Length: 533
Image 1 (cartoon, rainbow, N blue to C red):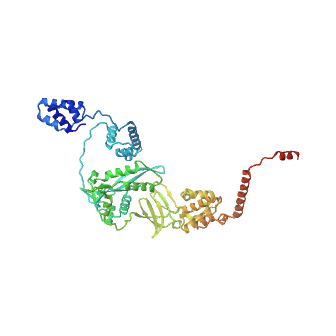
Image 2: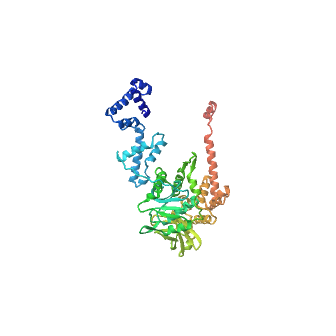
Image 3: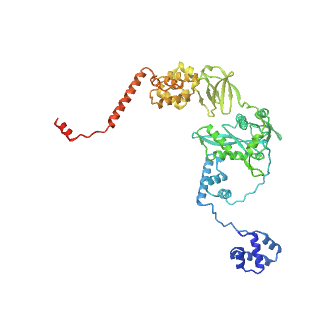
């Protein structure tokens, strides 16, 4: 495309009598271009409209690009885009619409694969696939300015994840600083008051401070009631305000966009974290992945001197100090049943069997519960959000199992332990449950966990031991060295069994050496002597 100055020069040189050939050489353009410019000028001049001539001389040349073919959008690139769109449709059919890849994510994925393509090209192609060539009405936005550490916006979002292959629904609590656009997010099973309070406690703890203003939409955990044009905050929000000393602001009804950032933040956090990876081995792994993704989101801009400035650090440095962590729990009382459990929401949670028939205090958190007898902590369990579940700890029943060892084999408590510990019981103690209970009591009294028992068992296996006793595992737990004495420490007859195993091993080695020795061929003389004999 020629420049406007070149077009003006072509017309000027033609008016002073230069030929088209000379003009083309001087302007370094083709004769066809010169002919086209002069033809356009003659058409306008013949009309005698001075304004049209001025418009022609001051308007840069334009070319019709409507019939141009895409150069970068090759069949290979468009095929990849179609694959991403197909994946999006599959997620929508599974109820995971909010975790589909948007145009920006598709563009980033193409760049990572080495394709040089602009974001606008991807946008135009994807929009054409979804809507066709339809003109959209443009929307005006109002630019906002914020101070560091001043305003933070909060909102909820939904996400579906696969934990150990099972699909589960979680809720995202997302915090966004208005100044730096830095984000923090947390996963919860429920979108309730406890999760609302715990998310704020976790956020203030992680950023080591408190913003001066928190902004909410009209969520039920924040708004207690509507009184004409006013909104009454919930008791939980008032409690947090009084403890952490921040102010709050609500948006107008159906006007979540008034927050400015967070509606988009929920979408961004969800896509960046879970549109590519949504399978995890545990809830903790999913939360760690979410936090790492938020931390990796850039909050860098350049100042007037061209130097990079980390706005996240400025936000954190300007926060109000945090005095401590607020207790975010619900306190209730329960009576311990004959099964040595308390019942919450149709689920049973075990406590030590010495508490049967007593009333205990339960502190209910969003993801776990803690059980107290007076001021003494007796048990802690992860909350189950299914119905009719038995969440049991076998250590809570050791006193009863010592009197009733026959009840161990088919007990629900044994079925709830680590599968590796249950395997040890099935292989070595299924006919001697009393010894297994003694081992658990020994571990409990000496501060050892079930994992320590499993590690000790694996240590014995690694030294070639087949028959394993409680005394051997205790020796490993006590950090005793692996000696012959440890191997011999079994039940009655253990020393004799050890000697037989050692003799069998030596005999097997001797036979192996004999087989491996080369056989010497007999000479002719020796062969004749053997035949004569």
